Image (tube, rainbow, N blue to C red; front, side):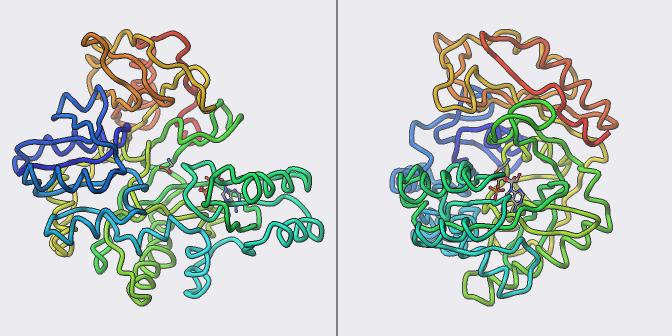
Length: 422
Ligand code: AMP
Ligand code: GLY
């Protein structure tokens, strides 16, 4: 069967790599892909959110399954558009994708169904939001309602910072219409964990736990990024906590979406804050996490295509994915300047072959391209160097062994990925 993967990050490289191991997959297309995805299939020069062009391509190439990486196309309704012409596609409908696409919808849903989350107020007028700040005490967590490429959350330790964030989101419109509404949320302390599950709307299969590292510098310092590294499993998610997450968050949310006429299919990604065994939802994403998917898929031993296809065909109840007991660590290497928007591009990358030669290491590409058939940097997050090890400690050592073989001018990465798990 021909399969189409939409996106160009490390997540999509990992998805294409894992699909390539299935005997049922004959050809993989990646739109638009990166230098690394060409090892597993053919890159297609179509943007990841150009729904019409993607649909025409899928019809022309007789694509039997499409897997969507990023949220933008999902929020635009790519699943509805594909299904309308009989194409099979993995992901939530436009209405179901609102769980990520609108923080106000998400919070109201959680409240209506008694699913634990931070207290909040929502605002559609800046004056009222500013007034709220005057009459309450910091810290404040301010979130743009809509999609803001992971940048729509401001943690404000002072009233001044909070006022600036409100002006920037609602009046300067830093994220466009995504900031027409905001929520102001209680600040939660604790340890964060990413919990992903695959669901066909009835059966909910948890994926192994993972933990992201959002800040750019070691010891969680510096600005937020898309994610500087991840590991799986996350020891904070003990077996009993996993049960609790399933019964208090994942299953109730899937039932709630069904009850509200927005049945949810695809990956449901919960960002959670855990404190003293108590779980609160920070947010949902309607897609696989990046970089969490890289270590998670390193640990998948059974057929990924079968798992996804079973979900699309509403027969997840017949599937039991098999996961390795080993640990996996992904270290993200980024361009000079990242996470600011004006990061370096076009730098030659050295050492990929040497790093790749280390056993149990995969170099997942993100912002890379070819110049004269050599890999160059082309994005903020460039590579996700991902290892498998007997223990987390072993996986950390192996990942950094590979990282040290790779260089380009201005490359930077965190030195403490996975440390928290030790
Ligand atoms: P989100 O996009 O909602 O996951 O927010 C981005 C990051 O902001 C999260 O990964 C947390 O680190 C942090 N964050 C979000 N909401 C809260 C909250 N209510 N309290 C503390 N930190 C938060
Ligand atoms: N790693 C965070 C995300 O995928 O949203």
